[in-house]
Length: 84
Image 1 (cartoon, rainbow, N blue to C red):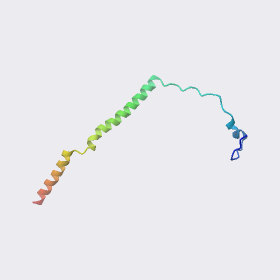
Image 2: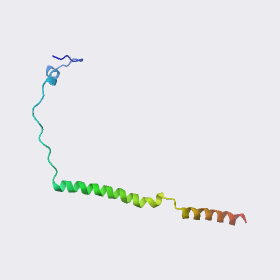
Image 3: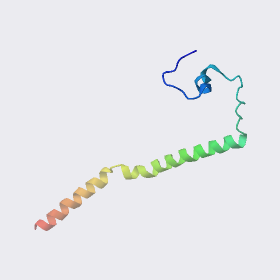
Image 4: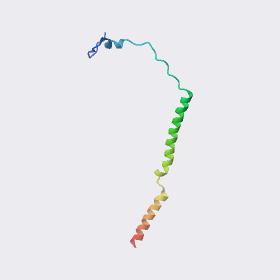
């Protein structure tokens, strides 16, 4: 008999490692066609939402060179007009 490092108050717990069950669990149920379609639809919706947010947000993330030139030109013009 194997000796444990710590005392166990119940003998059946100490010997539980020796017994193995020969009962196999039942096979998993395969998802139905409607469940698979629903999963695909949810996945496509999430992906489309992320792609749409990226497409809509891209103009805000880009630095347009023409708008930067207009901003600097406006700044120079306002400084020149105040300088007299």
